[in-house]
Amino acid sequence: MPGKKTYVPVFRQLIFEVEKGFLLLKKTSREEIIAFIKGQQHENGSFSDRAGNPDLYYSLFGALLSKALKQKDLLMALEAYISSIKPGSEKIIDKFSLLLICLVLEGKDSEKPTAYKLFRWAFKSGGGLNPAYRFFLFALSFDALYGRNSFVLFILKIAIKLCHLPRNAPCSFYAALLLTKFMTGQKVKKETSILLGYFEGKKGFKIFHEVEKPDLLSSAVALFALKNVGADLRPVSPDCLNLVQENYDNGAFLSGNGDSLRDLEYTFYGLLILGAVS
Image (cartoon, rainbow, N blue to C red):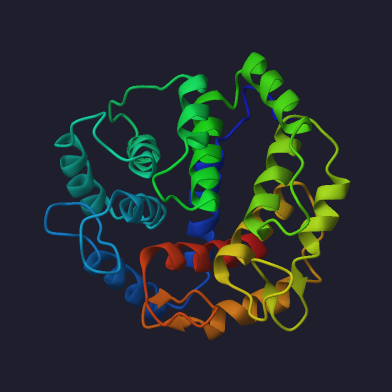
């Protein structure tokens, strides 16, 4: 379990890995990626979803990418947009996204929700929010705000021990569970083995065992979690690198599972894979 003096929140670790992945690319590819990210910023300072509309969830990935790639102008425009938003009026996914964007921007004032409130956001029913996205945003937020609070981590450790994911849960759930158990000082051999079971040779990590195609999201979060717990990535790295290379498209990365649309989220995952295996 990391000490208080050396602990780095997971979202900052993600930024660092994305930066490493970006710097591995050739100059022309780096220029294409920066141009793509700039092109995704809406005129109001937020970042756009796939339909070109302002969106806080995609703005989170825009913020993470802009921070990693040191695009200060994009961050300044995003901060101006965030300052115009009235707190409390967002959907659950927007609440998490807005909180994390403020943390990425640093120095940007944001109300710190209690751990109890974060749990309520995470497990509130309705809203049509994909559970994987909900858990991902909750985990990043909880870690950033309470990852160094020994009492809150103790409570989380108890809650995690009571958590029993089904064997057919999405790959990203097991990645989050693995990382959370490791952060709270628990043994992770079983979860490491289960997570590696989502990998298929010559392909990459898949969201479910039974699907045919791998995807960048599953591969990115699995590699990041496995790297953090000290797992040997050499057996899986070559195929994950091939997956990334096959899904690069003029400054962006595709999902890997057949979706041909480019967006900020999968561009983030593509760079994260590169950083994780470097």
